[in-house]
Amino acid sequence: MSNSTTSSDGGGALVPRAAFLHSLELGAAPPRERNPITSYLTSLGRGGRPTQLSALRRIAAFFWGEAARAHLERAPWHEVRYLHMQAFRTWMIDGGAAPETTRRHLSALRRVLRECLRLGLMNYDDFQRAIDVPPVRGSRVERGRELSHGELRALFAAARAQRGDEGPRNAAVLALLYGAGLRRAEVVSLNLENVAADVTSVRVIGKGNKERIVPLPVGARAALVAYLDVRGREPGALFHPTRWGHELKRSRRLTDDAIASLLEVLAATAGVARFTAHDLRRTFVGDLLDAGADLATVQKMAGHCKPETTARYDRRGYRTRVRAAAMLAVPYGDDEHPPQ
Image (cartoon, rainbow, N blue to C red):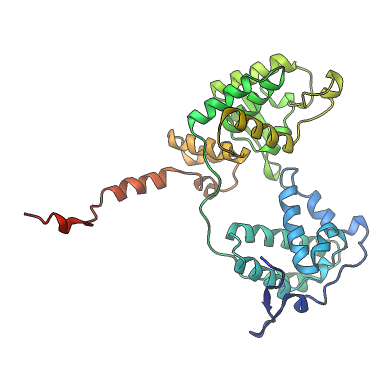
């Protein structure tokens, strides 16, 4: 999507984006205690901040130019009005952004404007008019991929073959990403006390600060027990880096990026096509539904707020449609063998 995209001025005419947004310029940052960006981001859970921060940077670049990506706190968010909001919505849609992506960006912008209202930077009428843009309709097929059972076996074998305590740790990370369907941020936030004493479940604080208890399948329990035998039962972060001395290692927590990196290494070692941590979560949901678990139960295990989110991972619908399609006899070529 290019910043040269035109936008409606409200009367049907199209004007260049830059001219349309000329009145919005970067200024001095407000005090931290009255900064809507600080207020909004600190209201989010740890796992949700990077995604919404990325969305806000994209929005800021649209309104105030690329330099604004690094200076969100200096942007006059309180000056955003309905026409600006509508222009951004149109720009995203016309640029081919998925409906879910556009909705997420608009949600971030609405939340920042609400913080402007709460902080006294914006009056109620201006806020209500600004956010009153039409909802974004539509959906897209879930992206990413699912891993086969053979790929999962190869990955666990590759982890177990790694030397030192790195192997048991990586196998346990895999076990929680697939066997419990945890998000990366949820895995790295786990402490030892989040694991049940008998290692039959983990207690997770997910998106929206919502807590859930996820039971572990036998294989995941075995992987976690093997890791705990190496790690020990000291309180603190469940997963540590492995390349520092004992004391320093215990004071550090594995990061989201470290999990992404270790998955890349395991994929290359196991000869498995590239995948992400979310692909393991996607596979967890799909495999449970394939095995006959009901949608409501899987939704709770995955920590989804809405059943519609869980349903997007449901492979059964497509497979049923494939079987139905196979029932039709399309008479292409039948003229070569006319009925007797």
